[in-house]
Image (cartoon, rainbow, N blue to C red):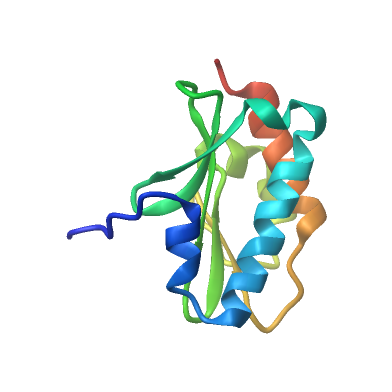
Length: 124
């Protein structure tokens, strides 16, 4: 499988319909607000063909996000899912991902909490 070669977040966003750009932007804002004043250390990147957020320029990827036809994919890695699995029953999820369908509001508070958890537990 060949993954798209996006250079940056804006390139990914530009190929999306407006309604998906809005939903994904809401997720991105929740992620960036989660780390608050530490945001300068949060680096936007593309990894595995998806927008991702790295802890520092050479640090680990904390979370990945992606827009699909029927849902927003949020990928807080296995550690993020394991720590919050008891709160994910409402959504389809796997060992490293959770799907937030477009026909329901985004759980931005949960996304913020999961991102902050990943920030606090990921090695630099």
